[in-house]
Length: 482
Ligand SMILES: [Zn+2]
Image 1 (cartoon, rainbow, N blue to C red):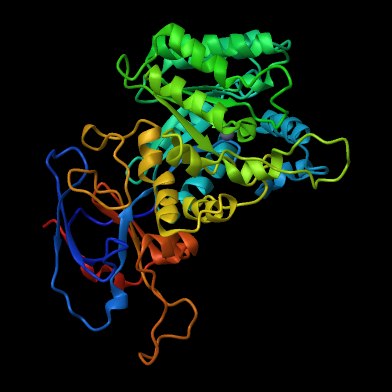
Image 2 (tube, rainbow, N blue to C red; image 1 turned 60 degrees about the vertical axis):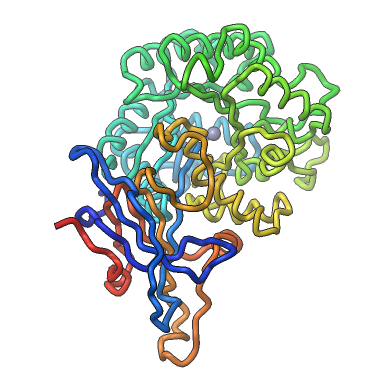
């Protein structure tokens, strides 16, 4: 069940904004409802003169969190007794592909709805109010995953915006099922409008030949353009040396987009490239060439790094039976800072053979980024927050006209009232006596370095609040619309 929500909020009094240069200042957020049928928009953010001594009680108010890439239908297979015979034995990528195919043969609508709700519940509790959710379409599951995704999208629409991807995880130009898989994907994209299924996604690397992978790319670009959808590729998911043929398929994607005329000027639809672990072998000149090609041809491309999956699965090929070979994942902060590319961070999978570890919490992912990218400065932490929040939202094309590609870690007027509130709730049992002061997080960097538990978070979506785990003390700052 989606969580209970409060009535519409008019003001939130006494919040910090996580400003690293002025962490102690407090603010009042006013939310307006310009269109009666639509949600709340932040109409003003003004300083308050609150001088209450217990300043730790002021929550931190940040832009809400976003999953730019998460698999809704494959979540929590490992937590479901019906699939207990499919738990990993070797932990290899090949095993994950085959055991997930076997699991998919057993998927039923009630099972998909149950596991999907587990994922949505965890995500929303973490502060997620928007997501790009992949649901697979192929000869094994037909349209069952898609139909479950549509049901969940409708059921959870008051607390989370779910953008569905009609996703071909399986080959569509090779193997005996290629033609049928392709037909089912095309049928689905034609049957539902962009408001229901906003994205077409495929996996060129599962095709059995480079020629078929290239056909996959051409077909997907053409169909997405014709049907006016965003496009999302799982691409170059290996660490084969760059000297080896074929070259990374990213170059072919750029070429086809260019030849077919997909530019920022021609369409508002975007293209996302996921995994791309092989690009982590790029030298400076390769990145410079890639950035030049993307910028020079005005291609609306974002990259999504999926480090929890990548460091588990994307290893340098090795003949040895050990698992000590080096790992690779897209260097997301460098893509942004050094090459001016658009890049974000996604959870990808939870509770399945592709990624048996990790949380559905974008903040834990941002925290992991600190270690993986050696990103230890305050600016780094703020960039990592953007990668699971404002940048992620813009990259999946959900930004409204007023907030297009305008990242940042501060709430802004004119934006939808989607807010994560982080409270200083003592969960150690050591700071309730008023004598000693608990360690509250007052800046974005402190939140990324050491994410607070979900019990300390409240979620505002379009002006209404989910407060399940919070005490009534925390609601004192809210004034609701009469
Ligand atoms: Zn994925």
